[in-house]
Length: 320
Ligand code: SAM
Image 1: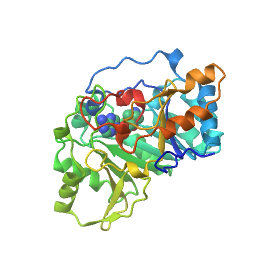
Image 2: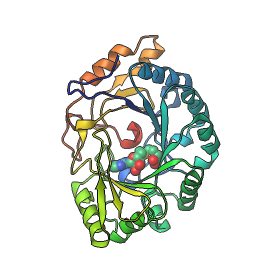
Image 3: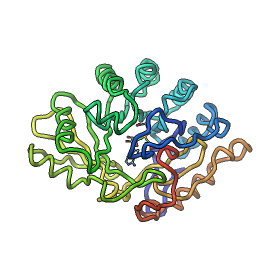
Image 4: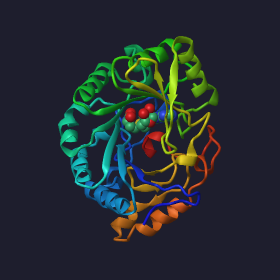
């Protein structure tokens, strides 16, 4: 059986957050604040994550991305990766990279070869201003290690109006000799991130910065992909722009999300949450609630207008 919503969108991609704890305090995510972390007893345990993942695979999920918070700060992360690695599903990870070297051998062994690393500036001082931790070099080294070891690496950055054109062009420069994808994400509104539409650096503005300096072509996009990709003439890598705010792409959405406390969300911006963890702890099946949840999915942005007072969790508590 498949997870198809009322708009004919088939859901094959699941993002599982394994913790809402994070070692960074990114301005665009938490506004630099510390959020209370869910008590560990309310997190899904490794065998529960496996059990939930198995139910989704039975319903047609083909790819699982592990995220957080910061997934690599969870003490039993290796056990979770091992359990998911044994399942018939493609695995991917989103991380800030700081603890990536510790896990890289395991990722190779379990066949997790798609890693998105967040890197919001190529200037150490600006990086510190954004994330609140002096770990620039660790993140850079982790990216280099993953690229050298043959992982498919994407770099995620959230530029805003305070990002200089030079910074955007420095990111573009990273794609000259390396086959990496640098993805610029428009800043999205979540609870607690003090979002203001005027802060968002839009796709159009980023493209203007690019076109002042380079000639480039746009690469045809599959409908379920979030990033519109561009390639600078003669460069090895690619630039992606995720225009959730200025030009949403919900019509091709194939994603579902599970929060670290085991709630199913059918949209990053949706209010509806269904408690999967409570159900499996009570020994109840999940299939019916999965189908209901998917059928209730709104056509666009969770049925909400993107604004600073949307009803939703913080990004750190949803899982990016
Ligand atoms: N800790 C991991 C990391 O840093 O990649 C995974 C979780 S983080 C929430 C996942 C992604 O969400 C990161 O690439 C981050 O840049 C992005 N993100 C967080 N808040 C955002 C926001 N308000 N708008 C756009 N992207 C955001």
